[in-house]
Length: 264
Image (tube, rainbow, N blue to C red; front, side):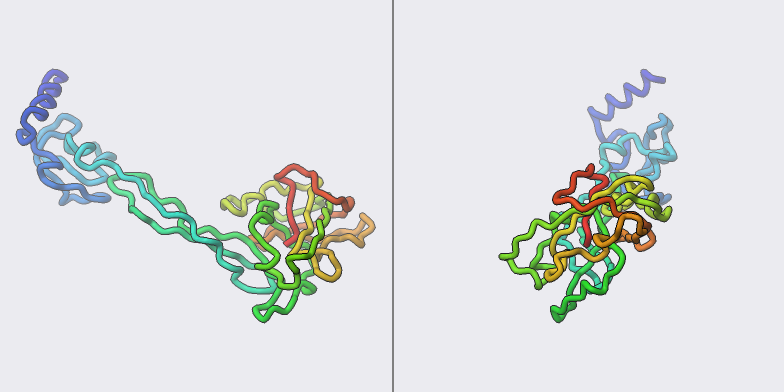
């Protein structure tokens, strides 16, 4: 049987038309399509009706030339769009970025990756430019990586480009947190998984989260004596929240990256 099969393959190369298949029938179909068939040798070495649809790989009834006639083509997507602004002002909300499909997957090619990503954000001024930072009582936090993207001018018009203040860092010891933090697995909220009870975390206070008058961040716990239980909430998932106690204020944060956050 093996010798016969090798002979058939050789015959196909010499005279392509002697064995019908997907190429001769001009067929390549997505999914499972009973009407997408040809007459010829199948991959399981049976001669007769063979198929040229994507599902034939699973059912084992593809025509012998399916892989060559219907090559798998993966999905291709474009670049991410810029991040949108916050969906609302003066309260924790989300921002979004999107990308479009340049080529749909074909013939069992790799599927498209996510086309939309959302991340938490918070703006400290209304659309009319009025400051509203005083409205925030608990500490709203996000990953320190977000600090690389935000700018003073974009979020708070209260800050001048000439303002020079290095900010400060607050160290807290986490006391409790909800189980929702550990369940986060989205790319831009995965940092919540590293919040743990009993760990010391660093939270950086920088403009625009820093009030331009008091030079403090809302919820920084600076006035706490260290025994007071303070509340925090993760931006991007309002159900990820908990409590901590102040350890100390320092000039610069020195915690590991997974335990480094910013007031937002």
